[in-house]
Image (cartoon, rainbow over all chains, first blue to last red; front, side, top):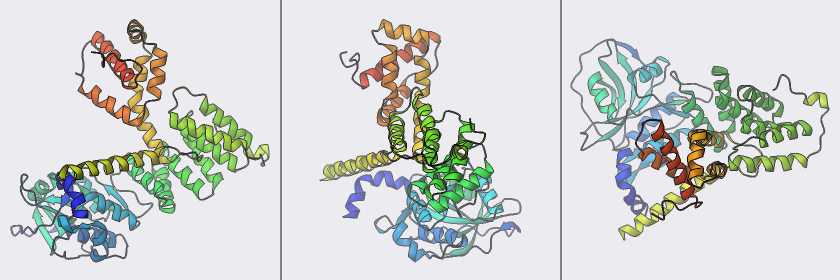
Amino acid sequence: MSALRWRPLGALLLLWLAGCTQWSPPAGTAASPTLELSATPFFPQARYQCGPAALATLLVDAGVETTPDQLAPQVYLPQRAGSLQPELIAASRRAGRIPYRLDPHWSAIEAELAAGRPVLVLQNLGFSFWPRWHYAVVIGHDARHEGVILRSGTERRQRLPMRQFLYSWQQSDHWALVVLKPGELPANVDSTRYLAELAVWERQGRNTAALRGYLAAVERWPDQPTARLGAGNMLHARGDHAAAAQQYRALLRLRPEDPVALNNLADTLAQLGCRDQALTLIERGLRQPALAPAVRDTMVATRAEISARPATAAATECAAPAAP
Amino acid sequence: MQSRLLKRSLIALLVTQSVALATVQPAAAALISTESALTLEQRQSRLAPLQQALARADVQAKLIEKGVDPQAAAARIANLSDAEIASIQQQIDQLPAGGDGLFAVLGIVFIVLLILDFVGATNVFRSV
């Protein structure tokens, strides 16, 4: 049944799918490696199962207790003899590690290696018109960047000439992934991409990990509005309303009329018992022209909820410190 | 058989997509999630060029000439659904880029009429 379900999308999936292929490189010249994460674990892959093996390599390296066999049911599609990138990403989230797709350059891989993180890559070991997809883990490179060192298939230490590696990698649109502990930032981090990933964690209710990520982001980019919003939301979710209000106020200093910040701060203040201040904020938000209908609806609902609450806190407690 | 399967998976795809859309819509609950905020930001950045264009006097004059109230047009644009915006974006992408000032004005008027047509306010294109 599930095989049937996949068939119509087969053409689409082929682009994403990676089976596993053995590829014996020509014996490389032995250059002295400048960088090799030799403590990276190694799981020789079972037939076609390079996806689970490569992901297990990254996760165990990042401190997760798992094995390819445990991951296989989450990421391996028997009927396609391979794994899909979205499933590797989803399985990484389930293991509590933040997946982050690297920029499509060798230098991004190099920066991660330098930070001590192995990098999962998707390679085409066949031809462009007859692809043989394969997941492997980059663990180092040699002195003159002439060779790349990988955990690949059944080879514990595979050395590929740089040009050959780059060619095989380029065909997957330079797909490369690292997994991060919550609160860790990638070496060359794109704030938008990193925060979009945290927003998924927030939706999935992985609040503690998301909060750690947002707080790390706030520290790195104090003027990043999304980081402030996320941190506020996650503090609010765990009932720390005073700290949440601080984050929303910081966001309002960056974007004085941001309707989302006004709405969320209003709700937070209401939770703190500052009803009048909350109503003032929500009215200020509702006065804005060209509000998206969904936001307007939420704000109207927030206003109704606030109005139904008693004002319990003293006016002095509600005064916003240096808020606009 | 194949086409039934295809139809079924298309429906499944549409259902999952609309579920995804539904989850990013802020619900009645008071807090707006970061994901919703990001979706909104994307939406605003797509709409901003249209809203700026609508604010221009020359564009408004052209619209009035066509019998369209610019204020009504602005209200319509603010209330477009995400799917409608995506569809309009596609049509805009097909328009030739660049051109002189006159072309730009005509292009914007074309887009506004397209939008109004889309939301059923006019039938300029359907009647052709």
